[in-house]
Image 1 (cartoon, rainbow, N blue to C red):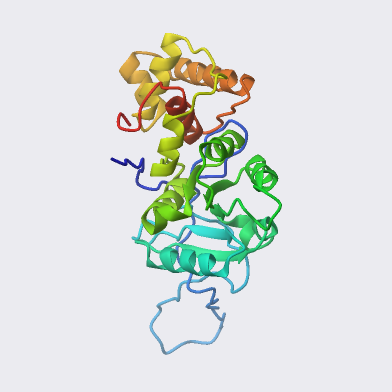
Image 2: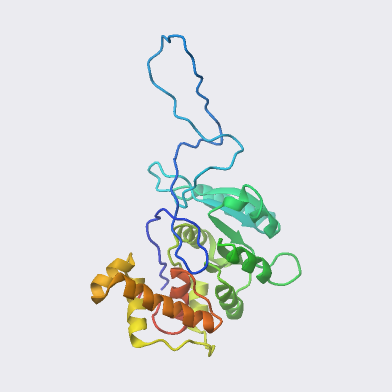
Amino acid sequence: MERSLRSVPAPRSRRGGGSERSLRSEPSNTNDGVHSERSLRSEPSNTNDTAEPAEGAGGAEPAERSGACSGLGGVMITVVVVDDHPAVTAGVRAWCAAAAPPISVVASGTDAGVAWLAPGDTADVIVLDLQLGVTGPAYGDLKRLVDAGRQVVVYTMRDDRETALTCLDIGAFTYLTKAEGEHHLVGAIQAAASNTPYTPPALSGALGTDTRSNRPRLAPREVDVLLQWFHCESKEMVAQKLHLSTRTVNGYLDRVRVKYASAGRAAPTKAALVARAIQDGLVTVDEL
């Protein structure tokens, strides 16, 4: 039985280091890049005093972006697709366009360079094919993107456990095989845009069979705080439930992150901590 961890998208800002990522909001009056100019006239007008809304300039990068689209006046999630198979790229575009609400693929290309150039450099989510060309897994490209604070959904034909776990260790938001299809890819993109943990079936299987020994030793109270945080919307709620101060909760979570980083398994985001907890048997997918 597969369980996906999702929540209603909320405004965010880009992630960096060990800080949480939240979605940024912006005005929603974009319309296919067309700019509606308002002329300034001094002479009287015979028309009603109804001003046209100003819209985004065509071809220009948006000043503000929202990482999620609410469908009620929100701005679309933006995605850049890095894949060297045109048919896959076309399929991802079609799935994103058909999503509810729709997702905008703002750029695509056969190498990771498209994610560093406008308009791909400001996309909310990067869908990355791990096997670009014949040079092996694109771990270097993935690490550079993650280090720059980008949300990366790995979407690949590779279905082996070691590759999936390596991508998570590098910092990928989540890992999907191309056999998992439309439902899970769209769900993963939406979750990445809202920084909500998402565990598709292939990744769940990889996490469940992780037997590596580099697991940090967490104190019982650290585990309590960590697991409670997975079920709460905020650290303030964790503090209330455990009768702690928010500062104390932050302290426990910071120590957990330090321990994982020291073990070579950095977990700078909530999604990454969920993945680590599942890997280490602290919680199961069904419990989340």
